Image (tube, rainbow, N blue to C red; front, top):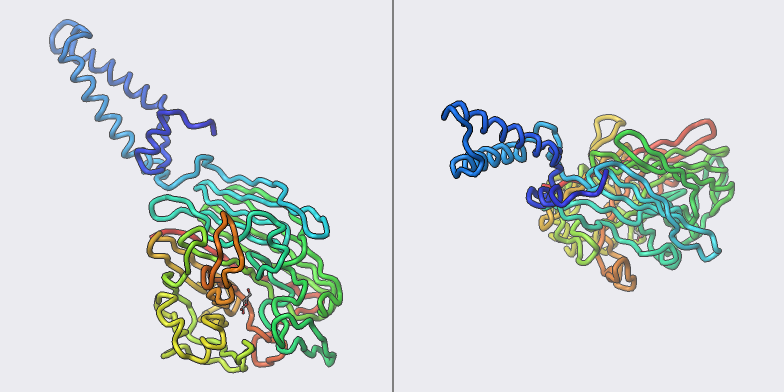
Length: 443
Ligand code: BGC
């Protein structure tokens, strides 16, 4: 699209970021027709042409042209269906650029996806991590609703999984041990007595191969990685692809696929910290949360599930109706004490295996809404309790306790040690497949 002319830019500003399809040429053409008709009308009534410098002529013309212009401006966006917020580009696009290096000197690339409404997602090859998501608020003002850093090097120090793909096993495996087909496997202990998020060097700490794609109405990037047999103690060569798609419905879609040549536990997710108020500048306690979960898996004090599935009714974990995150977070409840806030696996109410609503989050000051849909059986709601103000992120913002929250769609934690939980074992010949959609809107 050519750059906006002054005229169109003024129209856009005046009409609050609407895309107005009537071009100046259309409006000039309609005005010319009206001018010509006025001349002819006046000739008919008076029997002779009205001189162009007469007051009556000028006034009639101006009146008619302004009525027509006003009608055009008001109705055209609705006739064309274009009365929606729009990016200056007005079309989907994808861009690739360098984003620094890993400590080992491997180059890291950054992909920028943009849809026709101006929503923008940046993801990098280190950890396949989401670096930023820019979406409008209810007034059409765009902000970044994701915590993160300005360059890849900042992610390679001790950063708790910001934006990253988590694997091979999302969340905890008790004491870093599980037995599969009669054989015991040992994993690194990187979270007290347990193994968390794939071990010391999980999928968040590798550089993924990336392949961008463009289709009508969507753009995306496919991240690929092969985790070798024995990687962080897990059996089998695991081939993983994670496809990120941004479409024109303001949906960011994660699609996970994996295959293996030996039986192995697999539980893949994404660990983006969101703050819908924008730019991670205050805590998320004022966000309103709904979780489509009547039950959850309670944990012990090292955050390992007890094996029970318990109703949320009457507990501070009941988000079955929208509830402000901060309303009960500091109650003297064992589960909240163990998690230092919310850090729990909620079991989704689902009727079938398809995409089901997991969560809806609303930020009242900006009107931003994020909905999460998934094919997974559960979602970990983590209220950023372990952020402690030691990390300085994008634009120099310091990330303090509860400045971001995660909604990690997943199978239940420690499933390899809990036979009653849905299985997370992938076997040769099977394909792991799961989908999660983050959908943005305003209210
Ligand atoms: C876990 C938290 C952990 C965090 C690390 C979450 O998925 O549930 O317990 O501290 O990841 O960032």
